[in-house]
Length: 165
Image 1: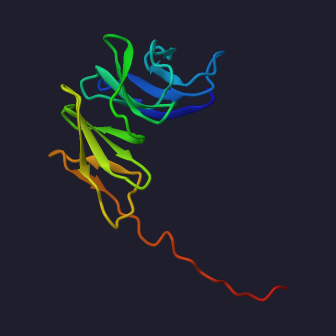
Image 2: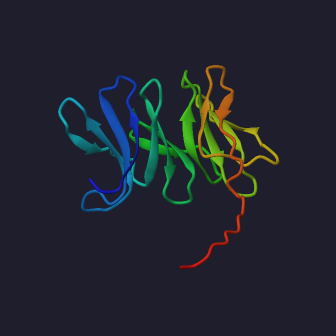
C-alpha cells in the first residue's frame, strides 16, 4: 500500500496498525490494521483523519495525531470513536508502560513535553527544557520519567575553500 506510516504492534503481537494516507478509493488518512495470521488489512471504523498510531499496552486504545490541526487524539476500540486529548499542536505520542499515561511533544516557541492521564483526561506539562533543543525521539522510563537524546552541533556553519579544476 502507498502512504503507510508509523507502524505499531498490538500488545499481543498478532496485529500491526499503521497510519494510511492515500489508501483505498477515498484517499483519506485513517488507521489500518494488518492481521498477521490471515494477512487481512482493514480500516478501523471511526479512525478517519488519524495518523501516527500508537497502540495502548492494554489494547483498548490507539493514540494518534489528527490530520486537521495536528492534535493528539485517542481512538477507542470499544466505541469505535475518537476523541481529542489536547488542544495544542503536538505529536509523537508514547504510552507509559502501564498505559496510565500518554506522553506527547509540542512544537514551536512553546516546545514542551506533556502527558495525559487516560482515566480522567487530565493534561499537564511535565517538562519545558529551556536552552535545550528538543529531539523528536523520547520515551517514558518505567518510573514515567522521560528519556531523550539531546541534539548538539547540528547547527554549525562551515566555510569550505577549494581550488576548482
